Length: 113
Image 1 (cartoon, one colour):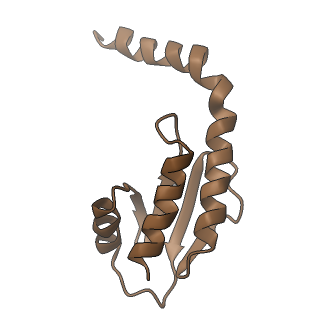
Image 2 (cartoon, helix red, strand yellow; image 1 turned 135 degrees about the horizontal axis):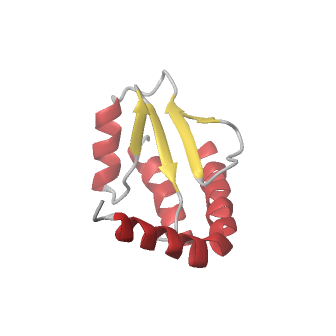
Image 3 (cartoon, one colour; image 1 turned 180 degrees about the vertical axis):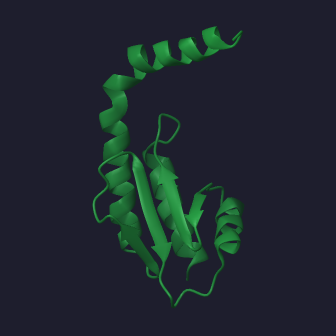
C-alpha cells in the first residue's frame, strides 16, 4: 500500500495537534444544537450532543424534501449531510468557528420560515 504514509501522516497530525482542541468542537456542537433547537420545524436527536455531531430531522409540518433542504442551505453557504429521509447530520470541526455556528443557525431560520 503506497498510500500508507499519507494515512499515517493524517493520524500523526490528529494525535499531535487536534486532540487538545476536541473540547472546542464539542462546545460548538452544543452551541449549534441549542440554536437549532429554537428554530421551528426542527427536532434534534439526541437532545444534547455527546460528540461533535448534531443530528436533526424535520418535523411533519415542514414541507420540504431531503434534497430541497440541502440545496436551500447550500445556497446560504451551509453544507449538511443527509442520514435518511428528512434526517441530517451537522459536524463541527477545526474549520468551523463561532461565526460558522451562527451562520448555520441563521441559515436554518431563513430557509425554514
